[in-house]
Image (cartoon, rainbow, N blue to C red; front, side, top):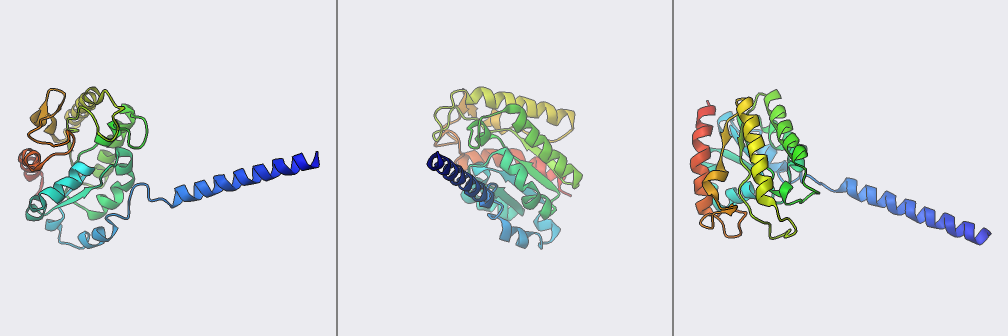
Length: 233
C-alpha cells in the first residue's frame, strides 16, 4: 500500500511540474509578436507627424505589400505593420504598440484571412468581427481615423486544406463589416470585388490564390490611396 501511495504522489508531482513548465513556457512566448516592430516603433514614434500619418495594420498580405512594393510606403510616408500568419486576435493584442503608440492620423485595417484559415483556432465570425470592432473603438478613442477594408478573396488555403468553405465565410464577414462601416460612417475599401474571380482570387493578381503579386498590389493601391488622401490633413 505504501509503495502504491508513493507512486501515486510521485505521479501527481510530475504532472504538476509538467503543467507548471507548460504554463511558464506559454507565458514566455511572444504570441502576438510584439517584438517584431518594437525597435522600429521607437524610431517611428520620433518622426515628424507628416512621416507617420498612416499605419497599415495587417497580416502577410500587408507585410508582403511592403516587401513587394516598398516604394508605395516610402514615397507616401506610410508605415507597414503586417505580420505573416496573424489573426485578428493577435492584431488586437498588438494594436496599442503597433498603431496607437505611433499616433497616426489614419489606420488601415485589413484582417481575417488567417482567422478563416484557423491559424489560431476554430473560426468564429462573431469573435473575428468583434476583434475588428474593438480595434475601431480603440482607434477612435485615441482620435485615429479608421479605414476598413475587405478580406481578400481566397477559395482555399495551401497550409490548411481542411478548410472547404472559405469563400462563404469571407463573403459573410465582408458583408457584415461593410454594414458596420456604413452604419458608423467609416470609410470602407472593397479590394474583394476588384480582385475576385468566381470564388477565389483572380490568377492575374496572385500566384497562390491568397497573397497578391505586384499586379494585385497595384489594384489595391489604386483603391486605397484616394481614400487615405481624403482623410489625411
